[in-house]
Image 1 (cartoon, rainbow, N blue to C red):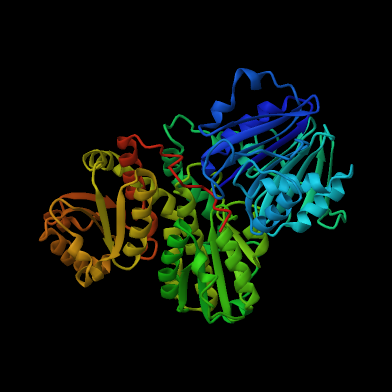
Image 2: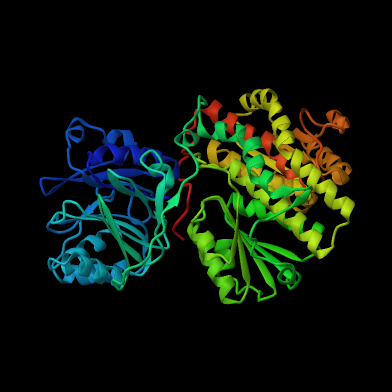
Length: 606
């Protein structure tokens, strides 16, 4: 969601601020702004268009070496220039950018208005600027401490004070904020993609920490002012990873990167034909104590969890439940110390998932997270973590993030099945062999691109699309449907095919496009029956099946084939055609594929 950048150093701040905000555009936003300190006064520029519109003749002249920037995804107040960040205090002594939600801002605002402060925006953020000014008595540390002490909710803050021309202040609580460390400048950002062009050395701020940053020194304290130790980490991916590399969109690039991403996830975790996790957090005794697995996630991560339910129950014979994280928090979940909770999140910053983790731990559950971003909030909050190592994913609609989550689920299932003795040696060997082949099989699945592109062009104007499947096919249909909705804005729904006769089939009419996923071989005949049902009501059927099932051509009008793999790993190859279908439908419609309307990459507010 909202993106934050900040710069203090020897060079012009404006260059990093705009370049950094452009790197954060993928997070989703509806306005953007910068504030640069020039001659002890703030120069502020805002836009409700793209970050590129912040580049004006006036901003090009800015020579100040201290500044902050922001991309806003509206929560409090409509997206306009008044509500866009940065926000200034009453006398313009303070400038603030904020990601998160201040839950008690209304009461704070009423208090400040009663004291004579005036508000120009509808945002919760403006109260922070006024509180800083209220408490500032020429002691910036005390002002920040008192302000933070009044705030309830989630926040990552970038703060400037015109009295301090060489100090950038950063505050973190439940929202991501990272410090980049280099010789000529120190910077902050919500995401490492904005930092990597400047430095690969970073400090991950912890919750309730405050950083006072100048160009050659960083002082980090807790909210009470007590000094905190900080560890500098090294980022291991390069700038090219976050560039399009000749593709029209990041989404297409990331679809095509999936064979390599899955290989990166798998290759160092298989040794001598066995799954191996270095320094893993769960030993055999702990594993055997679990009587239930609880999976939590949001969006595509939740869909990966639905796949995980089928895989875990089949391979581990442990009852598995999967819940949307935002619902899990309020459901009074039945979990305890004998429950393994698996949290899935690409960014590792998803607010609802983070809150659900804390709820699970409060009830005694052991939490294992599957995330992509090293040092993220969810990774730190969990009892253990398995990283997907997918590299940066820029497009808002996830593809390789989802695929690498599936790969980690398979790895964990095979690893656990051996220790629980719920699979034979022959079954485990076969599973490992298929895992090793998975990147090659995904690469083969990508060969359907030409057929998919033609189909997408033909159905780009569809008013509605239905996806149907059973078992793992149903799990994949959830993600396939979401991809189409996210980037093409076509209404689509996923249904368990066996439920068609229980009401859903009433929606099928002449020329309705129905996508039938038939990758689960043992349920192929059942799916053929479902295809006949929708055909009888006028549907145009687009099928996906393994190459061995040629008989489907007699029933479906459009057919795409996927390579055969392990019966529990089908999702990894089956999702590929429908990622491509969503992409090419959106491209044919002229949609903003990498930055779909109203969506954000990392949802850091509830």
